[in-house]
Structures are given as C-alpha cells and as structure tokens.
Length: 405
Ligand SMILES: Nc1ncnc2c1ncn2[C@@H]1O[C@H](COP(=O)(O)OP(=O)(O)OP(=O)(O)O)[C@@H](O)[C@H]1O
Ligand SMILES: O=C(O)[C@H](O)COP(=O)(O)O
Image (cartoon, rainbow, N blue to C red; front, side, top):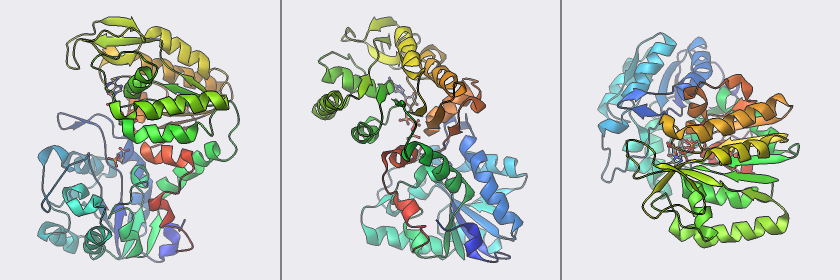
C-alpha cells in the first residue's frame, strides 16, 4: 500500500481523509470513542505536514432514496464535537456532503485546520451498486481536495464511493491506522500458531455467516454466541422462541455443521441461554438450556455454563480472533457472557497466545466492561473488515491503494 510519504509535500494542500467514525451512541451521546481516537495519529501527521484536512465518514446505515437526505439520528455532529475535543481545536461540520455548505467550509479551511462533511451515506450514491453513480459522488468529493488518505479501516471492505472510487481520482495513500491493522491481522492469516480459535457473536448475522464458511477451512475451533447462535441451534433442530433468527440460512448452517464435522473443526455452541419475555423487558426471565428455549422467550446472552465452556475452549489457544459480543452487553444483565469470553481470551493471551478483537461493538464492550485493553494483543477498529481480512479476502479499499496502481 502507498504511504502518506508518497503524496509528497502537503504544505498548503487540502487532504480528504476517509475515517470510520461509526461509533456507538446512546441518546446522542458517544458511549465509546475508540474509533475517533484511533484516527488521531493520521490526522495529526497530516496537520503537522501543513495540510488542511477534510474528514469524510459514515454513521450507521441510513437509507436515503432521493438524493442527499439529512436524518438527525445519523448526523456526525457528536463525532465532530468529540474529534474537536480530542484534537484540541474547533472542527466545523458541513451541513451537507459536497453541496454549498461543504464547498464554503472547504474554501475557508486553512492549513492546520480540520473540517468534517456530514454523513457520507446521506447520499444514496455512496453505497450504490451502480458504478457510474458511485463514481459521480466520488468525483464531487475529489473536487474538494488535492489528495486522499484512506484511514477508515472499519470500512475498507466496502466498495463505496468515499472508500474505493475516490482513491482512483486523487493521489491516494493508506493512513497509519490502516497499516497497523493490516500488519496485526496478518499474524492470524499467515500461518497462525495453533490451536487457532475463532469466537463469533453480534447481531449482523447474515454478514457473518459467510465468514464462517471460510473460517471452517482455517480455524481449529469456532465458538458461536450472540445473535447468530440461534440460527445454529435451529439448524440442530432446537426451538429458539422469539430470538434473532435468519430462517433462510438454516440449511446453509446445516451445511457448515456437516463440513466442519468432516474436516475435524470443532463448532462449539452455547449449552444455556439467558432469556427474557421481550427484547425491552425490564429484567431477564431466567436461564434455560439451549435446547429448551420456550416459544415465548427471547435469548439475549449465553448462559453461565456456556461462559465457562467457552473459556475452557479458549484456554489452550495460541491464535484467537474474536468478533461480536456474546449478548446484549450494553445492558449489564446480559453482559456476563461477553465478559466470560473476554476474560478467557485475556487468560489465553497471558499464556502466550496472540489475540485479536475485531468489531466496533466488541472493542467497545472491552472498554465499557472495564476490561484491560492491554490484555489483548490487538484490538481492531474493524468489524466486518477485520473478519474479511481473516478470511483471506482481497478488500477493495485496500486493493485500490496498492503500490501497483
Ligand atoms: N442475542 C442477541 N440478540 C440481539 N442482539 C444481540 C444479541 N447478542 C448480541 N447482540 C447485539 O449485537 C450487537 C453487536 O453486533 P455486531 O454484529 O454489530 O458486532 P460488532 O462487533 O460491532 O461488529 P461490526 O463492527 O461488524 O459491526 C450489540 O449491539 C449487541 O447488543
Ligand atoms: O461498524 C462497522 O463495522 C463499519 O463502520 C462498517 O459499517 P457497515 O457494516 O455499515 O458498512
């Protein structure tokens, strides 16, 4: 990948930086600013080099249909305010992406200053599958700057206008975060020390099921918790009540279970589950066996016996990749499973294992639960991106920064 140094003298230049500020928010307040902190080294390096910096980023998955559509709950305003605090300077947020507000903001921007553009996904062209639509948006973004730095590691697996297409239109380089992430993750992809154990959870079930197919070829053991455990339990013939379920993936998962058995890869599922009457019920209803979830209950965490089982399955691991919380850890009543797994990983790491935590929410869980970040070998800012790298895929946002381009 091309480094920032390849961009030459940046004094007085306007540099467009793609960051990943997709941070967890609760009532408009950022609950974990890890991704914003992780962006600082690149931003400071560019400011020190005399550049004026324009940051573009997304938050969540807004669904605009007809042109740029602002939606308060997906505004980057909290991220801009936090970035300003961390940099110790005012960060102006344009009200649009490439429209009059962005143009005025960028025109006034001086070397050493930082501005942000509103959520890049407020424009439907950002995520369009039609090349020409994305390219048109990328051209508008490129017109704002002299160079492009891709530093939003969490989004480099997306072939989107601000990640991929814009890199073709300006002198482009990878930021320091992208370099650091790729370096660390390559330890798990290139001849990992064994046993290699992968722990998967979270709620983006369909995003992650495909990853499992690939990891069956690479890992020795897969521990499955979080929202995706229910599709596995169902695939084994158990009822899952009103829990998160991808009904159309059941057969696919049955195929994974069969292939894992053939290859001698162990797939470990929870043996008990913490259930509630409803997602928003004020308190859990209890712990049930994983093969006996009542029809009117929803599973929101792995149970205590599963926490112990998972920790035991991690104990001898020499390479560990963890993506996705084991339950709805944001609520203390459903955080014990995630804590048990995190502590199991910390123990294995102190025993000589190499551990990677991936996923915005998993990294946030480590901090929110007050766990020791230094207990893990690498905490990635990427969720899907780190998983796809672990799968060995070529990521469009990295490929486009190749020295050969
Ligand atoms: N059993 C469950 N039912 C519903 N939601 C769950 C369950 N278990 C975990 N979750 C939710 O999953 C969310 C995190 O899932 P997600 O797949 O986004 O993980 P991630 O680590 O952030 O990865 P990425 O960075 O790719 O988004 C959390 O908000 C958590 O509350
Ligand atoms: O949270 C993430 O993993 C990244 O910001 C990418 O978000 P996306 O899955 O909505 O593309």
